[in-house]
Image (tube, rainbow, N blue to C red; front, side, top):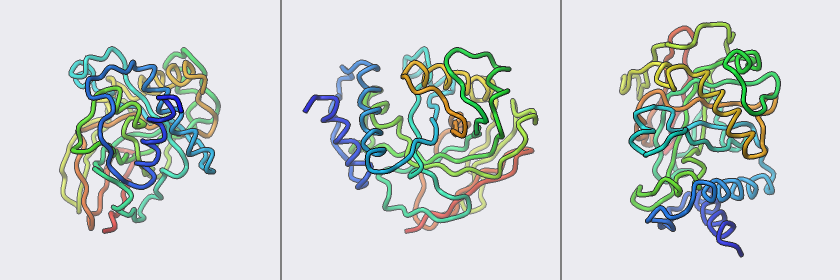
Length: 255
């Protein structure tokens, strides 16, 4: 078994069984291309088990986070149908290892986006927008990992919740939002935190997914990235996002 497939199997099994694993690249020697190859191979295992690809998620969409990580570009991961949690329902805490949550804005596409596109071209492909939550979960022991390791681990993406879809003609460039746990505000932010405008995140998603030979498809969801720092979640909580003009989305954490 090649090293790529070996690591892909390790991470896929870890995600499937909610089992933490030791770091395999603690010195960060893997290239980012190799890390994405591991991610892709891991997702192919899910598809082979019957899961369906439903979109992509963007990460490190904060300029400060990019600088902190020594990056000149965002990172991204792949979404599958098995990761979607219906809004307002419960998710079992035992599905995760180190789960945290981020408030986001989500796009759903009405036609494909392939390669380098402009902001207006990207917006023209959007069917609707919605407030959303992403559950991120590193499978690495003690929550320690390098940049290649987090990319290989599907950019930590583990679950997502989408609120009611809204008209994309709403100006969503700077919408205030709160992340709430049990009705208490724990983070305050704005959609402007996403590269200055969430549309830039969609443009980046089109470029990066096309470079990987997987252009964005009609019907796919694009999670634009965390608009605030992530918060740890625990059994028994109700987690929600409230977003100006777009409404809310939430889920319960079952113990």
